[in-house]
Image (cartoon, rainbow, N blue to C red):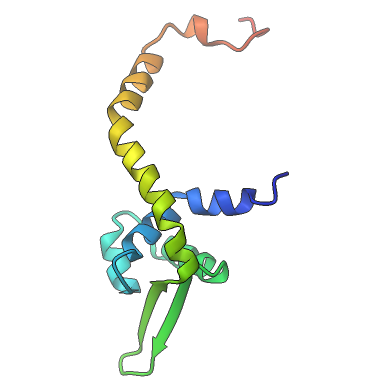
Length: 121
């Protein structure tokens, strides 16, 4: 197995890409990220941020105030992945309609021609 596969899996995951994209314009608090990332659960956001921190892409800074304030920010390593992710987002925006049409064509196709080779009914 390719040694970089786990990194590719992590970076390409839905919430990782969205968190990195949201942190591109500066540090954010957990609650702000949660509000901006529609649909993410608290558990998933926590797991994603911990993974990014563990992998060196995000720093977590705790400010000793009342109430406690915690901010997340991209590291230099984290900022280095924003360009490839931006290119992927641009590709997705440009090709969304083509992919949607291909999916619709596939979903509406005659199922007889969709069986894998060697499979009979």
